[in-house]
Image (cartoon, rainbow over all chains, first blue to last red; front, top):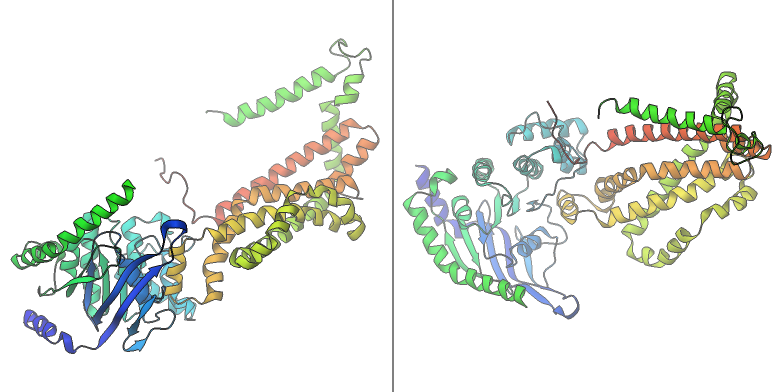
Length: 285
Length: 266
């Protein structure tokens, strides 16, 4: 039954309201000194549907984070337009939460104070914010760790705190930039399952950046493959019709997963090799 | 090391004993000087020095001087730190102002500020404020440079994260720049308090009616070397107490800072 609903969702995907719409986005960075200018992404058009989980994969250094920063409003594209729920984005994207690849927690605030920071910034009363923060810490499995400072938490716990910090504001769009890449494989799969569990409760729109194809397939509704940089653009789109709810460690062994993986990997391989060669040339020169 | 404190105390005792032995006119035959009292005249005698300290504390004459010095140190530290923090944040966040004032900051920092003491005395009189002013000029630059550097080195990821959580420009100051800069102020706490203390004592020494520096200066005028050393000893002990208090404050305020080794011995 669940499978049928899933498939139905996918068939109506093109009729869904669009949460994020990249239209002909190009980002060119002014070069330093003799380096000249560098075009990170070129002419990218991409739609992310309301409630859709989209992963963007591509070789390292291909400008994946650039796209995410554009969607967040942290970076203005050199040309092209970005629309959020049909409205052109001006300034910071207030309906989006962002989970960064690097450590982004405020080190001088406890886990609880980090989680409640967004509420405080919005003027929510201290008591109410703390109560809600406590609830969210519990939901991400950190009950009792609220008074720890980030350096007293493990890498996985810090990522959970960051997740709670983002989700407490109930953003309609979640932007995630390789959020689990620094974690060991076991912690990573656990976090992925928890992310899916939390996501399934209210189906936010997600743009999930990763260089790990298995992670992308096991989490997403759709995988977008980017070409190697510079001037990155999408070169393939794959609908992932695996049934939900999924267990990320088990789903990897299903026949359909392996088939999808082969197909996407085949289309990526050339770009990965190109990216690798470019990096090598850059190091050599 | 076992009995570390005991060994430290023994070394201190040894130094004073040797000092007493070498300067005492009756114990050693005069070697360097023909007059046996000359050594005591130049170097003082620890026994007499401790007698002076004992009289100071038992009769209570020293307390008003210590209180004045403490007031000057505290005021210089607080005013200097607040000014350093404010200007550091301002110049750190405004590249325009920073570029404009850079040569002046460098010049003022390079100037030996002790020469300002006479000017401050003319401006603020012989009371505590001329000493506070001197202390402020010393503390300000230490705090300023730390905060300036701290603002420049705020993690851009943390900054972006707080922006995404909904902070406007003013909230960024309160949520990121100020806590980050404050941590830099505290990391320079020992130096800043030490400088405030130096400002207070040097100011007193150059002209005042009260304070430990004044006591030393008076004794020097009367060639009373034992009292001079007694004053120095009291100042040193006082500085140690200040340092102890600062360490305690630092430990409480910087709990969020990772320390080198987090493990505990069971």
